[in-house]
Length: 351
Image 1 (cartoon, rainbow, N blue to C red):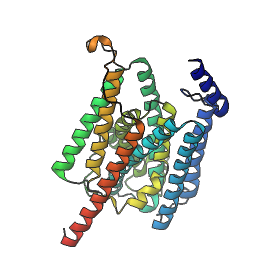
Image 2 (image 1 turned 120 degrees about the vertical axis):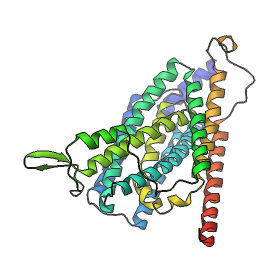
Image 3 (image 1 turned 180 degrees about the vertical axis):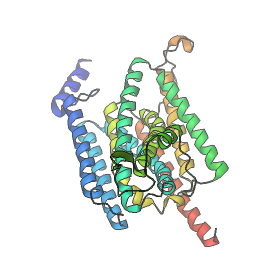
């Protein structure tokens, strides 16, 4: 016991990060750095409206992925190996779920006929809204987990239900397509009906003043639609990553770095999304796997009085995060390769 305490103290003295907590200054520095990257993204890409070329999107996508990987390396080296593995598992999972988000983003852009040159501003603001909302969800999730261990049961069941729903839709309706129709939710419909708006885009402005009265542009409605879509996707992504780590710092940074570069990934994968025909199946398998992992964890730390007398259940298989990372990467590789082979085969057949 004393040796364990000494090791923890030594690690804290060396890295400034305790094994089970992250100092406030690290949080503030991380949030400041991520905020600076978003500002940089705005100044370099959004300030001058344009449609990024494939080369531009490729270079900047590589840039943001490299930063995310370097951050993970830093977590591995300066915190510990376990948290490094948790970060990479969380980042890959969140990045994969973000690609799924892009299907809806493309559909929204098509539905609202957003000019290509102005799409970057709408996307970046939508991504910032997503990060803020996920930050709130992460804080609420951490507080709930700290007080009630049975929350993992809810997270696990929700992910398994989401996986079943996603798999059912994929098998019944086939692969997702960016040609699908966008159906606004209640909030978007309310905004469309009650806010004074102009019928056409005015550059990339969100509001304009005409005859002394302020009106909202379609660009504002698009951002609301993107924000509401991100809110729904956060309901899946936050429980999923809490199935891989219980460290709020890892949860937040994995989400933040997954969202950074999503703007460039949108333009990079825009023409390839329809070829990822098995992405839905792959994501459903990942969510189901993490859901099962969460339920096993909840049973190990069980406090529900009607289950095993409120005691933890022993003898359950323990799923290491390193194994989870291997499973997630394996599923993504197989489904991506299978998707591309299927798309190539269909193209040859003229389907």
